[in-house]
Amino acid sequence: MTTYLSHKKAHFDYEILETYEAGLVLLGHEVKSIRASRGKLEGGFVIVRGSEAFLVGVNINPYQPSNHLKKHDAERPRKLLLKKKELLEIEKQTETAGLTAIPLKLYNSGRNIKLQLAVVKGKKKHDKRESIKARDTKRDIERILKTQ
Image (cartoon, rainbow, N blue to C red; front, side, top):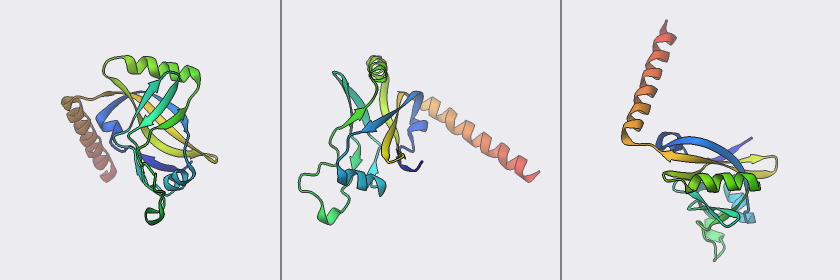
């Protein structure tokens, strides 16, 4: 399994409640671009309309910038392929105040490109400080144990 793109600050900025795996409806040049790791997941989110889910705000740059399609929209909404049960769960959870669904990473599963998405709750500033403090103490403990 190769990870092509990931949302590096997701674990720091959000409290992850539940994760899901979804397929993506992509065009051919978008697949090539993702396999070349040309894109950005930061700022993206998932919306549910009717009985379909869409990935919005994710930037997938053109595969060949000098020879790209004239109508290429890097941030177009992309349809997600989910099971009906998962779709209903995500819709129910995102209707709750303070919860949203964001993309965590794009990776391959065999020949297919999959998206790992999570239902998250935003962290407050003091929660982020606690995360930094816990990370620093863990690093100090590992450093002390390594020298002994």
